Amino acid sequence: MGRIAKFIGILLVSIISATASYGDDLVTILNLALENDPTLKQAKANYRANRETMVQSRSTLLPSFGLQASTTRLTSGPTDSRYVNIPDPISGNLVSTRIIDDHSFRPGINNHNWGIGLNQSVLNLSNWYNFQSSQASDRAAAVNLAAQEQDLIMRVAMAYFDVLRAQELLETNLQEEEAAQTSLQQTQQREAVGLVAITDVYDAQAAFDLARNTTILQRDFLQARFEALEALTGQAHPNVDELREDFPIVEVEGNLLEWENQSDDNSLAVAAAEFNLTASRKNLSARKSEHLPTLDISAFYGHVVTAPIVNQGIEIGGGASDRSQLALNLSIPIYSGGATRSRRRAAEYQVIAAQESLEFTKRQLTQNIRNAYRRVNTDVLVIAQRQQSITSAQSALDATELGAEVGTRNIVEVLLARENLYRALRLYADARFDYVIDSLVLKQVSGILTPQDVLDLNEWLAEET
Image (cartoon, rainbow, N blue to C red; front, side, top):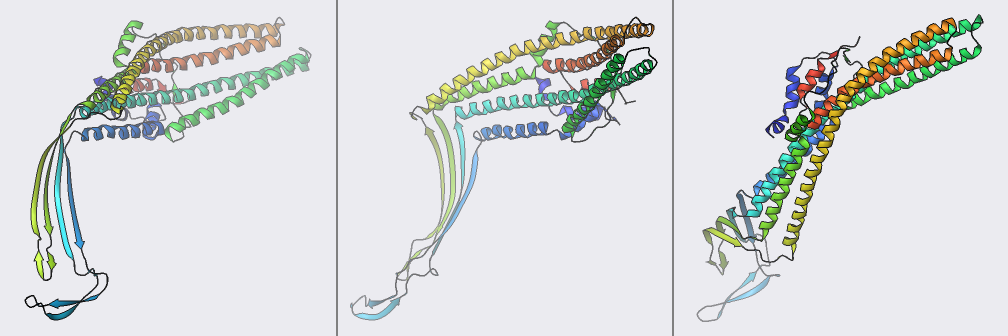
């Protein structure tokens, strides 16, 4: 799993440092997509946000430290002003009369204090397992982010080669339209001198109209493919490098069993499922630990200053004092209305779900790797057959045109033979691009798709002529 973990962050650096492209080739567009693709940016932001869950879980194991302070002012007095007789304390005779003012905020008593508190969990297995569960979840999220980066490679490659596919199909359609127009003109000339019937002109005209309509549709399809590529990078790419004709079409190296074993070791989907299972198991351990005792230690130091109370000119109390406290707190949960057992049962079901998810992922991986492996090898056979079909269709068209000239074939047969040729050309182009994409899909499913694969493929691109 070490290679998987290192994949994150390597992708962008590897491609930029290893290439110095000056055109809109695959590497250039992928670099732009890495910087501008909203889907990948969203995935990275979500990963960083979820990663904070692990930080928060870890905080329950670390000490908490806080500072508190307060200041108060106390005032008192009668509601209304009144006269008070002051007697002689010895004889008891009236000495004087004094007015006591009503309540005022000016005279008062000021008190203030400050303190420092420290709390540290000494024994809390539930918090410890929660932290381990969050660590496993974070690893699963990291693997999923790596899968998102691999997915971006595939999305860029598919969008890029969809453009090339649409360009080649348009070029073939233009050639077919030009051939149909030439055939129409020749048929019209031959009909004018009485060599063919007017129905041949109608057939040639219908073939030309159909070819021209297909060209119009293909132009729109090509523009849509360009816009799909632009959606990934945020920039227009009116010219992209083409796939060279000598691009090698070879069968997959190694047998199917080797690829299955390789995918078991490197699959990002399986790795994420395994980490999720670990997280679920740790979460179950945390829920089982909720009924165990917990032990915490707390410490406090404070400084308190109180003002004296003045009563008939005599100050009572007041002064400054320091306070400290060190406590060891033991908590033993006994009953919480069934919530603890309920959380434990829920965690057990989550473990079962994670186990089944892992099993499903492994089965799906086996199916996907076999299909991808077989598809690439099938593409090799199909391309070879498409090449042969082009040769056969060209020979059939030449023979049919020659027969039409000597009168043994008619225009309908010529049109059908030409349609077969251009259909073979389109199918051959489709097969080549299918092979490129399927080869990348095989590596993606196996978990071994890397920036180097993009660099290697980019070597087989040439500037548009």
